Length: 100
Length: 208
Image 1 (cartoon, rainbow over the protein chains, first blue to last red):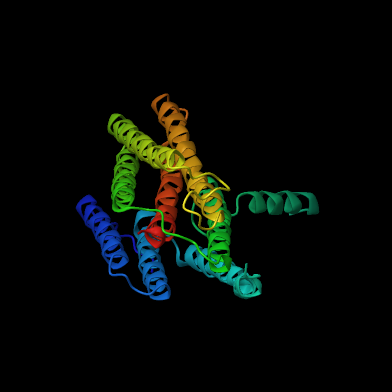
Image 2: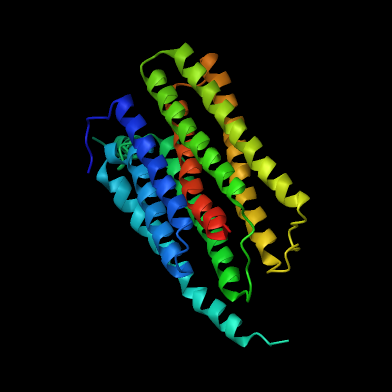
């Protein structure tokens, strides 16, 4: 994971253009009128890909010692994943709503 | 070696032990902040998802003009990440004037982003959107979630611009060095990273 060879500035511009391209794909997907769950899943996957590229290259984690990556990311992702533990309660709220 | 000198040596070794991560303390501190802030944003976005799932009717308030505005904001913020990278590289190369110039351009792009963001806010407020009022008759929570998530992000951008101004000033007066510029850059890239999730979830998922 770690490497001493940093990218050139033109490579970083390419990464920036790639990230902008992904955002463009997100906008195109939005106007394809996909089912909400499919759209949400697609957008989250693309945003996660963008986030990974940003962390590795723009935030230079690729060029740090691997222990930094392995200390920070699994724990953070696990905490964010644990938040979803409460999500079924939102479905319960929706089904319990009184109809007027 | 007697007991007291051994204790002194051990104490000194403890104080000077190298970081297991091979990075400076201020950079490690910034990473710890970023992790905690990522959890804060995660909780805000989760709360938005929770309310959206629980609401009977949510609504899609954003017309294409708002999405286009968001797209321009994304391009501005991404460009600012590249200018920040250039500033960090210039500072590491010892090109102080160039680093300060690129920090200035990054601040300018951050300010443009904030202005575009506020323009979107005022447009929504003009249409009658409030924290707890939905003018289209849908879920009132939309205003609360949208203004809180984007407001939290906007406050990070504004804080970043102010922090960059302080760093640029200190760096020009030799109070700060290139490691301060790099640490500030880490924060700025994080603000960009968060927007990569805020834009699709808050704007695109609410597009008409």
